[in-house]
Length: 331
Image 1 (cartoon, rainbow, N blue to C red):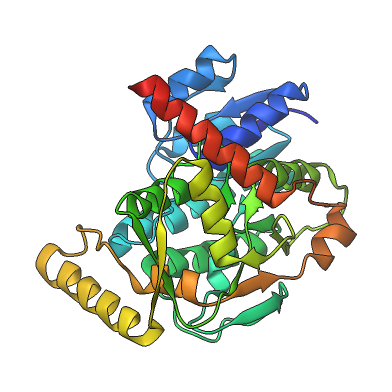
Image 2 (tube, helix red, strand yellow):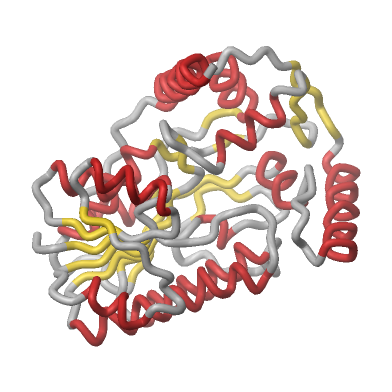
């Protein structure tokens, strides 16, 4: 594999992919928004150049020039925020990357999307890639990831949808769970215990490498990626939080009142702060824990040779222990 550009390399998945490719002997160019994280990549021997993808077209062209492949992992990933911010990074940024790849004649573009494009306020089991989006997007992140995925598919990219990434270095999922768990009480929404499906960071990186290497497969197609082990939500959260050294009591909260409360908080944020304040509870957060969403991995197994290799419960314990050790070193 020739030189590869990784966008979003200062993020969780992009950084892990860049490091994995370097270990495999691939020449990697990395870009991202965080100068501090970029400095860490440079100390590890990875060529890093900061670039504002939507705005710095000439700099992006220089990064893409001579690359055999591009992994586009850059995104604004958050359950809440202003639509224009998501639009700029997730949609305009993707447009700029696609245009640069076309000008440079890049042979393979792998676009990192999200299974949240399929999110709905109902249970969904065994979702396939061709499942139609029947509900309006629950937040600006979902809306803009849908649009970015459409652009990538039209450009002939291989599109991956890794579900609920976790592992050492996670800056999205684990910090939010910890913030809630530190109160000592953790809400479980609805009457049942829906299955929760996660993706260990190593499995997601393996899928990216396979998508880069698979000759002739996946062009202009989307693939769902998980670790393939849906487990009860209470078991997943309990295992992780205990490993973090946090004792929490799970409390059942009726689903519809929780959605109504979250909707009210979102209304206050939009009215009072133009969306700049992130509510402590959003409708998407309630729905993500209250409604089951699992995925069929047949296409990724068949076309890419993808096979999850991680035992989820063991990985949750490992992740929690590493977080606890980091907290101890920080004291």
